[in-house]
Length: 191
Image 1 (tube, rainbow, N blue to C red):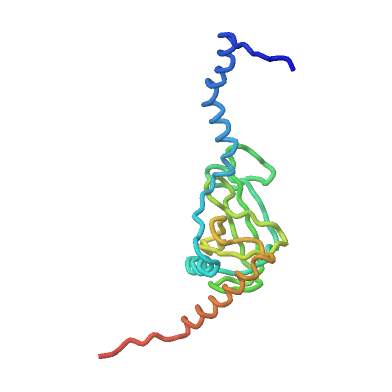
Image 2 (tube, rainbow, N blue to C red; image 1 turned 90 degrees about the vertical axis):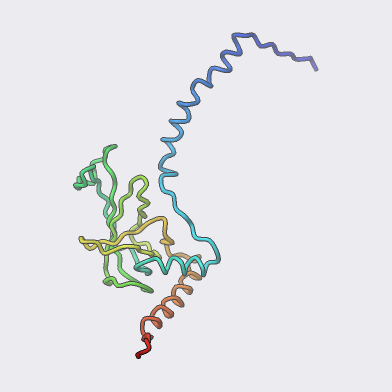
């Protein structure tokens, strides 16, 4: 096997070192190209499933199982006025309205059919729903003055599937305890 040796000339070193000048540019491009992946930061609950579900149940105004009957996405400009769904522009944000039909409810008051309205733009953390899918919804506000509820990716909102069965059982127990607590009168001593 022949002995291989490499020599590096001084002008070769400049060629090797030159990419360091572009590191800030590489960093900026990488940051903005991945901004959608890190644009929403959520604090996730700690503890057992029961503890996590109990905390989420306590903080939510409405907790239910519902099916997305229809979805509508639209753009809105910076002033908040709606524009056509087909108009795509870099200064426009996306909004999604979803009509749901309730399957089972554990907390809150809402009609059998209700709608959510969420912004699907940076840092707002709106949840994007898919038509005909069933969801476990933890809603934290609503209805607003226009009749819409809000949904967020920072809650336990998720599609119904085989992994949500245990969570649904916990919610049923919490709902029973919540209803019992509402029916039990509190007695205050009289003097």
